[in-house]
Image 1: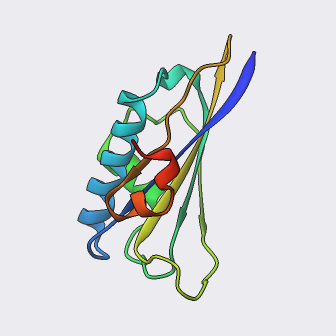
Image 2 (image 1 turned 120 degrees about the horizontal axis):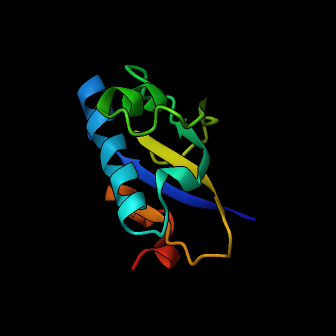
Length: 121
C-alpha cells in the first residue's frame, strides 16, 4: 500500500460557526471531487487554522456539516502567528492510502490560491 497526502486551504470571509462549516464543507468537497479518493482511502485528516478564527474549529465544523467522515480521525492545530501571513485561513492535509500511487491535485480556494499559484490551475 502507498500512503499519500493531499493539501488544501480556504480563506473565510469572517469568523463565525456558519462560515467555518460552509468553508470546510466546500474545501473537503473540492478535494474529494478533484482527486481519486473515497472515504475508505482516508487514513486521517489534519487541519490548521489561523489565530483569528476562534468561533469554531474545522474538525467540529466538518462533523457538524456532514456525517460522511464519522469514521475518520480528525486533528486540529493552530498555525503559528507570522507577521504578514494571510488571515482567516483553514488548511488541510488529508492522508490517504492507495494500492498504487495516484496523481493528486491540491485545492487552494478563495484567496489561498495566492499562497501556491504553482499548484492552482
